[in-house]
Amino acid sequence: RSRFGSTLLSFDCCLRASACPAGAFGEREVIAVAMEIKKLSHGGSDDLFPTENRLSGRGVALVPHACELGVAGRQPANLKDRAQGLWRGAVDASDLLGAAVCVASTLAGTVKLDCFGSLASCDLEPAALRFLPRVPSESGEEGEREDKLAASLLGLEPSAFRLAGQPGQVLSHDGDLWLVPGASGGFDALLQLRPRHPVVAKPEARCCRVGKHGPMGVMLETWSEVPMVEFPRLLQLMMGRHGSQLSAAKDARSGFLVEEPDEIVVFHCWHRVEGNEAMNSDSISLEQLLWLDVVDSLAETEPCEEELVPAPRIVFADEGVTSRSELLEEEKARTGFEDKEVLPEDAPRLASLSFLKQYVLPEVMKEEVLPRLMPDCAGGGAVVRVFSASLSDAPALASASAAALLASARATPLPATLDDLFADDVDFRVPPPWAAPGAGPAQDPLRLFDLTSVILLNERSGLAMAFHCLQAEDPCAS
Image 1 (cartoon, rainbow, N blue to C red):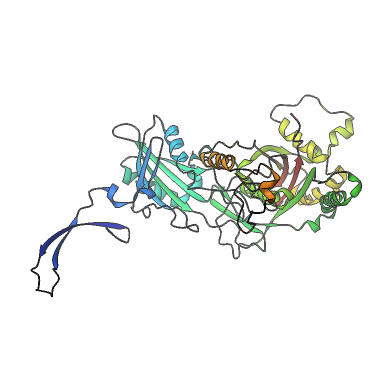
Image 2: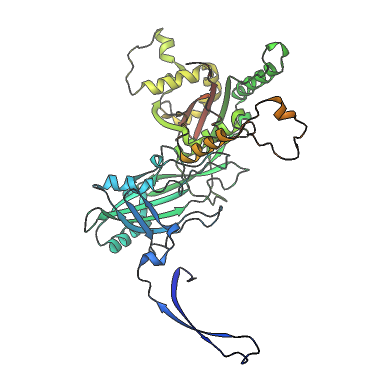
């Protein structure tokens, strides 16, 4: 078989051998070989593409397919490459939602997280991916053209879906899925994957391109990180806690052999700037920008200095809007008491703001944060959105690879006596036969920490203030 471009040609080779009399070519008997080659037909798509380029799973069988929409789908050929192209096939499901869920589960391992260039774990579980119905205002003219091509290819008007992760997550691919009812049950599916360009085009400038969908299409903005020296009191709070932890660690009278920080506080700020110069990356939403800031903030903390940030564990949530009086507790200061009746939908937001006020005092909020978050030009009724982030429970070692590593580590012999370590016949030039300290599956660096992030965003003034607090848990607590 020989591959020319994207076409695989098959040939049938027939060998016929005949013996020549000795002496015709010296004293050795020579066998003459005649070869006939004839081209065979493809037979079908199963012969056109290798098995590793297929996408298969529970009730899903998709093979690469080339058409006007794009090239045939393929899996990455090396570590720097990424999957891309079109796949077509059948999905065995009873309804559209079930079919979309089945296709999304097959993309685990192919689609990963884009983590802002931070050292983070990017692998996703099958349940983290999903296909959402595509809104016409989000597709634009290019999306309408692709829908028409998909309809002509599938023979019916398809239902269009777009690939998405959990709230705030930035995926390595953009994906579109078209589904139509199959002739013999189930659904006929057409899947398209497009690799995204890196989120940050200018790492030294810490800029991101943000896209906002509206009636007139996508409006692009550039957001850049603000140096924290512009907020001296917040910077003093962040560095003061870090300095006190360092001094406590150096204090010989503390009585502890190892002093680990109980609290790590990180502040970040982003603002909208003019121009989109030198921005070659794909656009992301404001929610995705804030999720990326959470990942980047965790990468700055001590537990993740040399370990991967568990980015899939980050749970990002929109908690509604707040006001100036709620941030400064003006109502409570004026009346002397606060209303004890709290609506269930307001409870998460109020809890996040109460946690923030434990670290950022009202005078700091009023003198340093609000003048930029709620400037006078934005009006007294400016809307500030509140977002939060936390860490989900650390997953147990349930995967096959982790279980295999753990079983291998347990099967490795360990030294039984000191003679095993210091015997005369021990050769220190070779690794010992027993397991080294820390061998086995890598542990989550934040398994003993709680994350509380509170982010304030004013889209009108173009400013986002992010507060991240990492608190250590007691490993002996029940």
